[in-house]
Image 1 (cartoon, one colour):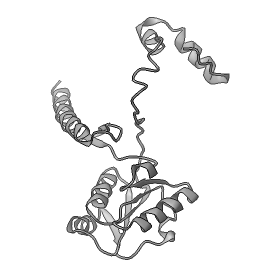
Image 2: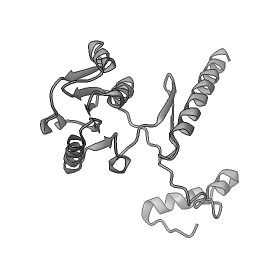
Image 3: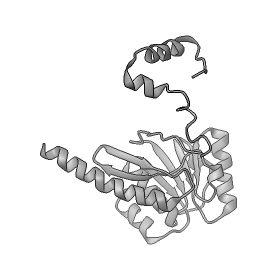
Image 4: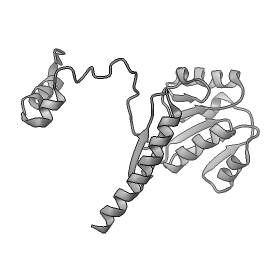
Length: 196
């Protein structure tokens, strides 16, 4: 690698490079960094959402799926929409989300850690994105991936073991199939581990 890293980070990188062994060789192998450089790929990040305030604007099918995913990982999900589907009503009834049955207002973002814009009104979605940008709140625009700060991956989970899957916005079917297969594998892996 020809790239130079300065300061304390550079010192640590040099230490890793000089540690020897197959791991270091594979990590710093020439050409490895640029592998598949012609294909865009998203970087996976995992956040602790436990107790964090999250806003979902909309209560349709996509909004409901996203609200459920966030609630399952411990987020404090507030939904704002004048009407929505039965499944969102069920999430609210069981206490997984709180649902304000009214139109979105800018004040709804106060204290929010991230926001999902998932209404059937393009102007409202655009307003949500604009306000998030102004307030430096992470936003996911369900109808326009170009306006998203983050994306919802397919998730396979068994207890605290979580795998997130994305095809980087290119092939949702592929990501869905991989998620299902990984889910089955993780379940078998954990069952086998528990038996040993």
